[in-house]
Image (cartoon, rainbow, N blue to C red; front, side, top):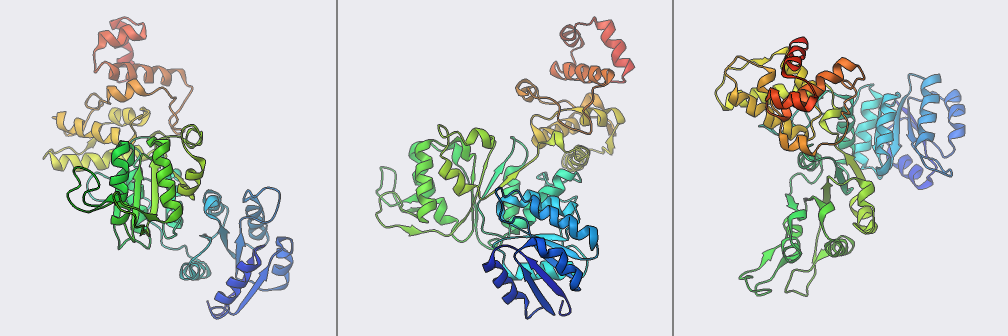
Length: 453
């Protein structure tokens, strides 16, 4: 990169100064500009190899669109110039969008110098930095929520790659069964704290009396059963990552205590008056929608801002297209080995059934359905009748099928889905399914034959 000329465009003079000081010994020339309107004129007059471009510039509303606009102008006139975007924590989603519009990569500010240099080095040599494989698993066994090739999962991977090395507090949002716990563990593993503890607490299950003792610890004699000193989870996670699961379910009183610790960066164990400094990176998760969570009668907004420097939305399985089949095959392989079965795949009707189901229980429901199918099957291939979904999940699901790859207004497809849902709901009882559908048994059998169900 010693021969490279880099143009840095940002309206923050302190950032321009920092970039100039950092890059000057590493490259041939560093150009800086605070006004993006002058960007194209500079490119006309100078042979620039790379542009480090901010996503936002001073305007009435900071949307990130300014950066995307200037990115498009650069790529339109100078397609060979590599562009690396600069973004704040809250605009990571837009930065991911910039990759699809031609940016080589993006960096989150405040950046780490070594990380910025590595990103620019990779861009200069016209190759992307190493990314997690599109089809990968977080851990061994069946914990594989990041298996997938869908665009929505690629976006999630990009976002995790960018925020994990930072110190940002992260709020992980998503329905039950989508794998929020696994996302939190992976963020820790990709972070600079991965040599230190990862501590998980299901705070939603803690009573008012247990909340303080579990999180902040206690001294011997603090209460009747306190027979010895005990560290709280904050102190146990010292230097590492603390993951607070189901944070949307804690009371306002618990929220006030948690906020105090996060603001003051210390805990006071029960029975003590001496504060203990804490150094942790906080990850939180909830299945409560952010809009619902922001109701101050339910959750303090000042605490939301503390825990939500960056927000990560884990997609439901019904939005992930053919990832359903990838996951199903993984679970099939795992449980076939576990239960010593020689099952080699799925019949076509079973695959159709897997693809058209709405998965209210998400990956967790798919996992248990495949395990049940492997246990019950005596064939070499899983059939549609072997795949049964949880009646508990079906009772609680009230939303539409959201998978864009399989959603359809075709009447025959809608009829097929209604028939399959009724049969699954009554575990194959044709009489009950026919009654619910308003058909005779004979009419239902004709449709089963017609659709090869």
